[in-house]
Image (cartoon, rainbow, N blue to C red):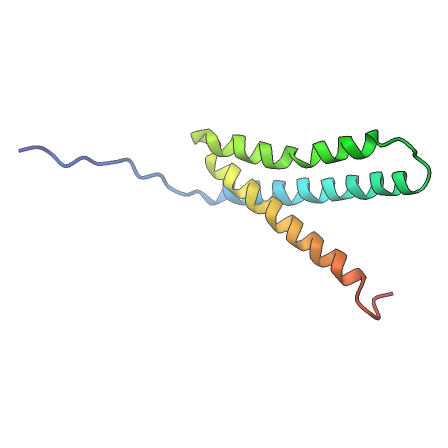
Length: 106
């Protein structure tokens, strides 16, 4: 009689997921700060479009880093947390941006 095949069960550890989440939120908010600085630079004096192109290219870096972390089995949980953090950061950033335009917010 053949023994049933067993697959190893991986445990989800909280530290890599939470650490990735925090890193993702920080990376997202840093990117938002860079975008604001580049936007003000383009609006008030810089005639070059190069900083805006660089900022747009840098916008893809957190997502690419998260995907690379997800592909490696050792860093999969960190990558999942990182992508969750980037998503949460963008949602929170959109909420902050929208709240600035509400009546009575100034």
